[in-house]
Image 1: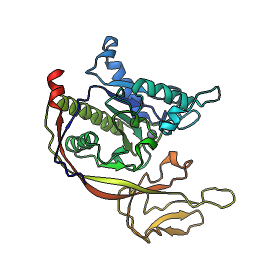
Image 2: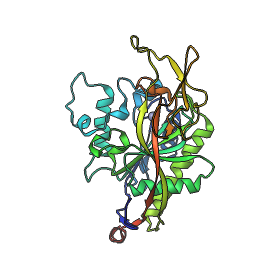
Image 3: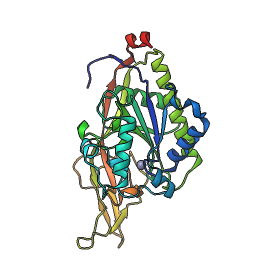
Image 4: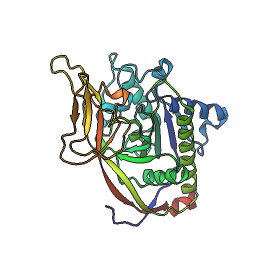
Length: 321
Ligand SMILES: [Zn+2]
């Protein structure tokens, strides 16, 4: 836990809002298109406006998650520094383009904040997913969203990886997170999910404006769900076919504590298999459609409380700007 209670941070001058990183996750696709429509052409360079990005236009046009490879796994330092050739997949080329537009990742020129919009078929409500549990900007935005949209279940998920291994688009910014909202089937837009995403983006941009105008944001506790491991479906050893579905008692129970011995799968012949871990953990991404190919039936996380310090913008910068 961080011992600091107050932290001064630089102004967030350039903020990017990205949708369609997965081309069939339609809330973000339609929200970014809508925001683009509302903005007069001449305001494109207005630095008070967020940079709007349709991340994977070819996949979006075809309403597919991706064309060749998952774009949101193409932003590790290794992938961004790999040479391009005629056989480079479309998404790797696109990741290099986005890194030029919003990065370079890890450099002083990168945008200050990337907010990447996603949907999940899992019953996860609204989640902020980040590679850091000490990015106070992301955590304060999360606290702000909790206050502004109190009727939506909201969690902060931490993918605990070294920064050079972070692989998603939001890792290109100095600060960044994904907003993941579900359940919504891929290739479908539901108005309630779209509206939640729109509200979240508007409140996020409000928070940035308040922060940049010198508002002091009081610290406080935030529950963080840190990824522990992924669990695959039971599979046939020879064909690798899935041989069971998520158990009805686990389906839709994202973030409900899973205890050793609880049912997790029901095989297609009708048997129940149980959770054989030694520690009670919180499941999420339960039965996410896109993760069958990744060998993930659900993920498990450990919950802990992080004390977030009070933050405000560094005064020197406020005087200059
Ligand atoms: Zn996605």
